[in-house]
Image (cartoon, rainbow, N blue to C red; front, top):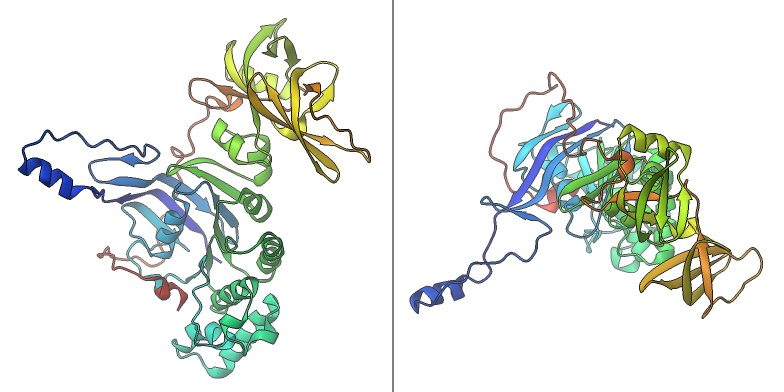
Length: 433
């Protein structure tokens, strides 16, 4: 196991103009050259290039299971590859087990990585794939055999040791890839969307296998996924990312219950949170949320946090999770367009003032077909989330410092001082060896 510290990490890719020939032709023909418009505004483009990861600060505790989660292109895989040594760090410092490793080769970082596409050698058996990294290090044969068979037993693939990868299912191949990583007993195990190529049933099974694996080996896990279900079920803490920035860090339950901004609230949770235009009012010293004529008094905990932040009455965006809504005699009125019966629950899709709203209603042993009917949805002041229209921040945490501005403490004296040297290009094979 090892502690991993990322301090002020930045990754910048050189910007490449995709239409150089057209610009050259324009100059030759002396046509007016229009300024290039960068339509992809999600990532910052500077004079140095495209900033894929920005001001990334994170301390991962020894033995912790941390999950980086976010939509495609948010920088999570790039961050993982910088930890692995497959990507050069543009700015900042990376520490593993107390030493700075910016210029250390991947094979010397004592890490292992599991890739999305398995990256198995097709001409080798399962046994040979798992043993390969130990073999090239001239590990004694009896030690190799012991480690491979122990890993195979942990992952329940002992019966497949003499097979080739082409004869295995996707789930079995992924277990082999994990086994190849853990035979090295790495201090840090990196996993880059390892379940994304599997079907829903296999993903569920493999999530359970990874949870069991975590209990049986002493390793720090850093896991990347775009699937928020994986993030919620696997991680001790999750790091929600967007456009290269950290949006929130916390336990899965903290992030679900107390999202720091509108993006996090919508990304974490299934079905997605509903949003309404509303007003935050002060009535008799109490904060009240009004959505048209429907008013809800906020809970004591929310009252206290809003007062601490000195939040004034204002127009807001109100967030309510689908499973926090109930059918009642008062509330927000809408027409049910679709009803999805899902066993113990029904997902009602409503139109509320030309907006789509989803409510999750328990069936309680009986199902009522509400399609075409007008119903009213109620909710309590304990389950509302209040977002600023100005910057999408959660008003309960409006004055909190940004997660990207938080600084992490680095070891005072690295165990192995390393002189800075040019970072050599690394391949994925170097990590798996």
